[in-house]
Image (tube, rainbow, N blue to C red; front, side, top):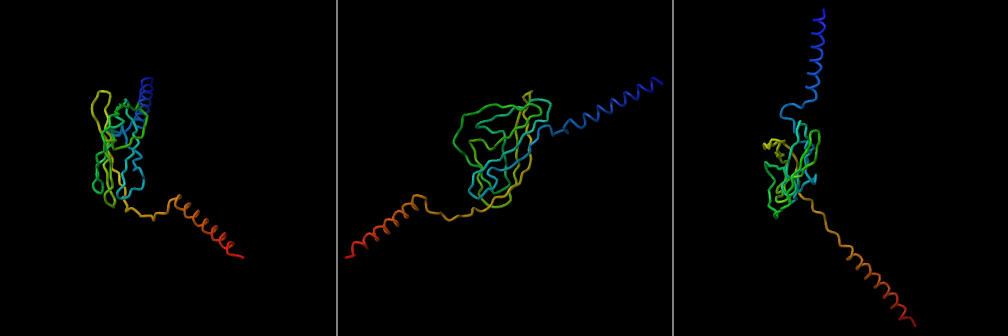
Length: 187
């Protein structure tokens, strides 16, 4: 009887531990997640430069490392409607890390590149986050992201404030001088 009770206890403990680990351990390949992917600015028009933002979530048991500053660990490739431009060089590079259970928002591309919308339409991007783990092995995770590029709406330009003030001052002066001149001609 004692042997049967210890088998039941062992089975109960084993099933409890198994249930705990299967609900708290991320699925294989999902230890590092890309979430909340969006463009900045959110509304992109033809001719606009823009960036891609993503939240990186470290669900792994170890710390991950990535570059920051002029080198962004976040990059994107586009199926159409976007050109990648070169900007001036940059030398501010730093290493960052993300502990288990932490998350951070990353912006891409790097400061030495730019994404430029060159035609309208729905655009698919493959966003990639590159990082290393404690054993220094290179890793990357990618996720698709779709966004729209619209035609630039031209807004008529209004006169500048200084031009409006000048016009009003001129009008007031003309009215004032005209009234004064009317009094000059009275006898």
